[in-house]
Image 1 (cartoon, rainbow, N blue to C red):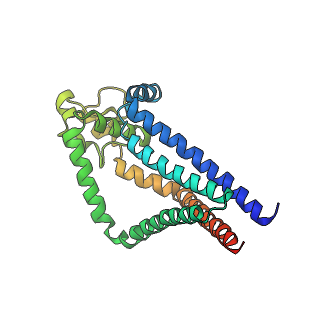
Image 2 (cartoon, rainbow, N blue to C red):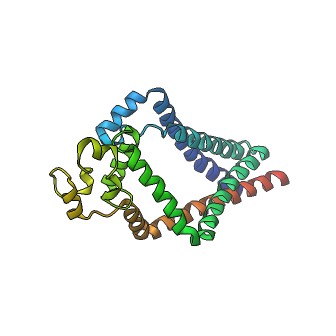
Image 3 (cartoon, rainbow, N blue to C red):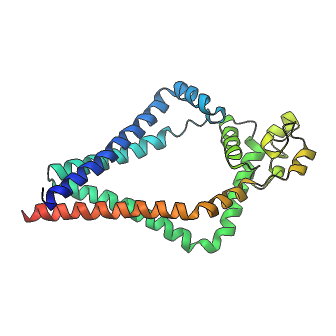
Length: 240
C-alpha cells in the first residue's frame, strides 16, 4: 500500500467514526423529540433532576446532521476519489475551524469587558431564580442539577432565592444551600455559607483550564490534519 492508499484508508476510518458518531447523536435527538416519555423515564432512572431537560433534542439533531454530512463526504470522497466531495469536506471542516478560532479571538478581545458580561449574565440568572425557580419545572431542574453537581447555591449565594416562588411556597431555601439535612431555613442558609455557582464555575475552569485547553488544541489539530489530508488527496487526484 502506497502513501496515497494509506491516506485514503486513514480518511475512510477517521470519517467512518465521525459518521457513526453522527448517526448515534442524530438517533438520540430524534428519539428525544419523537418519544420524549421514554427518554424522560430513562433520565429519571439516572437522575430525577434531569428528567425535565428534554430540549436537547434539536441540538442533537443539528450536531448529528453535521457529523453525518462530514463523515459521508470524507469517506466517499476518499474511497471514490471524488474531488467535489473532498472539497466540500474541506470547506465544512474549515468553517468549523474558523468558527472556533473566531470564538477564541472574541473571548480574548473582549476579556476587558468580562465584568460587564458577568454582570449581565448574573442579572439574567438572578431574574430566572426570582421569577421561575419553583414555578417552571425545566428551569428548576436545570438549577437543581447545576447546584447539586457543583455543590453551589444560586448564582451569587442563597439570597438569590429570597423572592423566588420556591421560597414563597415552602418558606425555605433549596437544600443545596444548607450543609445540614434539615429544612434549609434562612438561619441555616446564612450559617452554611455555600458559595454561589458563579464562583464554583470559575473555580472549575481554573482547576481544569489546562485539560480544556489540551482538548481544544487536540480538536484543532485533528481538524487541521483532516484538511491537509483532504487537500493532499484532492491534489493527487487532480494530477492523475
